[in-house]
Length: 315
Image (tube, rainbow, N blue to C red):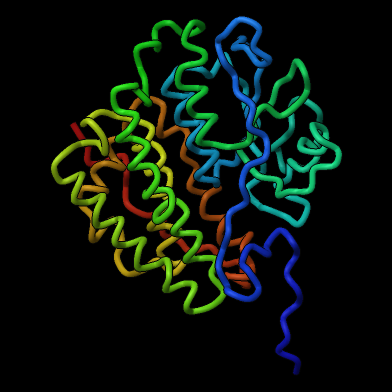
């Protein structure tokens, strides 16, 4: 009996064939919505549309900021199906593209740029007026949502997740949290050599220890106030125990058992108004375990869903 494995589809080929190291694609569409005279993409109610996956931590950031900033009636959203396929994220089984009836997120990319040859990622911030992609980089999209639409939701204008007086500290925290935690779980999980895995799993837990220490003295990562640094960390943390601990072999410690301050921080954010509505653990678990067949060939989805974030209540 042959033990040779069938070649992976291109969408699952994320690690370097020689080193086994995972390298994330740099986002391609980098325009911005700005509230300035003559702007190519000015803030307008009903003009912009988000394409997201409820499974994806990067897309999840945009949903959290959209909810907290009260932009639900300003920016519309379509959700892709959780099962990532060879043709990219699909629209199926009730998950539809309400604008064009596309079958895959790939179709949206090619509508914007017919010769596009990169990965078809989410989130996508779409302009209905010019029918193109404004931006597909989550870190930039959340900053647009943070302030660009404030005149349209004046009651939320004072809520700023990237305040000018804290930007230096926020940027510094974002840098190491992104590299070693947000992306660190992927660099560990998608590694295809032992050395590549070892290169990243230990720095990941060193950084989680660092976060735990910060949160032992403060409710939030920077300035003891909720900032984008917390939101960017949080979408990784809520996926950690149910997915990354087992699926990505990040099992030196767990959030529930070993990081009480990180767990309290996760509960604090989850319990903010409208945030829990952005979390779909079914999508999260089924996407990772059933889509990444190079890691989990049987596609079996574990029963556990991680710690209860709704209780106890965090004051």
